[in-house]
Image (cartoon, rainbow, N blue to C red):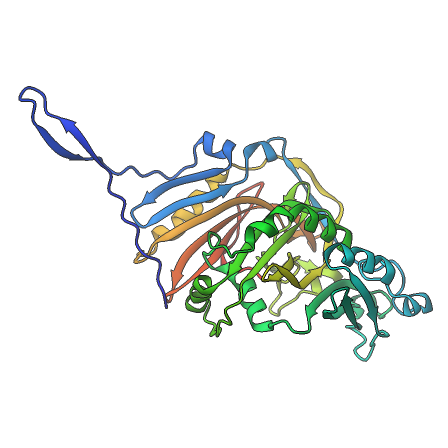
Length: 418
């Protein structure tokens, strides 16, 4: 597997000798530090060395964003307002609380065409499904798949449809390459572009508005792009343990994040270990992974994948949303506290290959909180996420360190996002 190349930086300066007028080479001593400066926290980017093999080249959430503190919220599960088992819903299903006609109108912003779908398949009561087709005005056909969760183990019935997931794929699209470019989000390929990347980015505002309309949620202004060409395909194969036979076409992924109070809603899943004197509420129990460990109460990004500049794949869902306020505005700790904890983690390791911190961001994440009665409930709370590219078993990948935005408590180390 490919390893990160060690970066050696030697800065030489010429100095004049006093007295005799002669010259000699003088090597400037390398400087290291372990904290962000006030200027870096204000400007939103930091670049410095912690030591020879530990670097920071990271986007940082600007301090002005959280200077007045941030709220946290109890979590609600997104649901269709019309009962899923009702005749009204059966005759005219809604997805993201929008009718077929409304969905078609929004999709026309992205790909002009006509939408049709079949009757709801309720063979699996806990996961009703609709299959559909979308035919573009250019004659291209797209397959559509929508699935909900009824949470019948919580509600005691299958009447309400929660957490819609929407997938739309071109009939002639290459699933393997689409999966590969999405997995590229975990590789260090952000600087690689295709011939179409700039064109897509110029229209990012249009795509953002369409996505907001599609799922009925506010989308954060920040987005991420990653591209698949011959160069990045090799990196993805080497670092993500896949064996893609690159087809020579150029792919671009545009990833949007849902917004909570002008911060990104993270897809990180830190999980929660229920303590002996605690009891999960009915919603927290839906995510039990055994041994009283709670997980998977996260939300995901929205993906648009383009092939040769043409939109071929849409993946969108709406799982979680903010409910009533759990905590009013509270002071957010300095990102330096989170950074110091990451440094401590790596000080215990013998670094053979370079470790690079790529992001130090304040985001909202799904987590759990215990109330006065020791009942554990899902919440949406601010966290510091430190994204690190390191090398484990010769596989370069990004992992996240997650810290409570109020206290600095560690929620998880080396978390791989969904």
